[in-house]
Image (cartoon, rainbow, N blue to C red):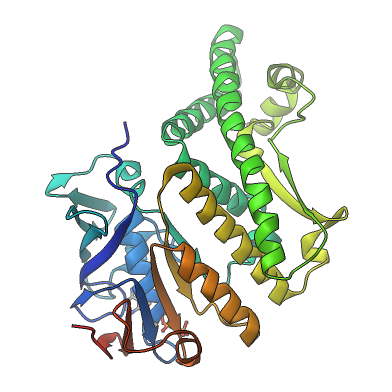
Length: 375
Ligand SMILES: Nc1ncnc2c1ncn2[C@@H]1O[C@H](COP(=O)(O)OP(=O)(O)OP(=O)(O)O)[C@@H](O)[C@H]1O
């Protein structure tokens, strides 16, 4: 069972030690936090550190081990999150050493990452975000499943069970001599879980579609409707159980299950044309921003939770008008915002200082210093 604490929380404190090139330090955050520094100073590492602390995942590294400062053996992060609506605090400590990830919440060891991550919907927008559209389906599946995970508390458990069953079925396919009765047991469970996962994904995308189109209009991308086509991982007109049966020889040949939710994808098109063939690179970036804002909005509508947004160098490839437009929407829809940039022009145009909800930090060779303090 996932432990859901509070719908609206902000990270107010972060102590870091041994993370990438960052100096060990103690930071205090507010609602909007801006990090300014030259290339290679450590700005993205700060956002990555926040994501790792709050979700156990990194948008840059598959292996958290690579986040440990060179020549050290461990990184340790400690953070405090606070609800704006009550005095409740959430204290989290996370450390990584070799293949050991340890998380303590309010002094208690966390056994499942999901039960911690469910409290912090963290969304990242960075210069590689448009790859969500142009690269393979894995990123798009992750995008859908992130959304479903945060609105459907049973989803993580279902999906983990499905992955295990799929692994068992694939192992059996590779074994050579297959026992039909054993295969039948795995197939039945695979079909049952696939249908449940599929239904949750489908209804999520149906709810996301109108919100996406609303934000695409706001971002002036296209006046024609964008279609979200969900491919569930097998022909929707056929039964998965029939496909597993008729495709058994092929599955045995490749040692892999060809049909199922692990092959799902979502395709976006305008007037029948894939969007990456219609939109410019800048427009694709705006499209991804609209997609993420739609996800944030849907999360708030369905659960009351508001996202923490990490914006890494998001201004590249967007003109000034669009930078300001996207910023104003993200500022309004997020619970807390962390932004990196090479210069402060976005801030000067959009935020009046001094402002109690805003802090500016300078980053230089991994050293983080505060520029203005409301305190
Ligand atoms: N494990 C590590 N230990 C020490 N330093 C590291 C580690 N991993 C990366 N670095 C270094 O940390 C520095 C900061 O990288 P980071 O990507 O955070 O900079 P940035 O300010 O976001 O740069 P840019 O503006 O170019 O995106 C880089 O010089 C990188 O080589």
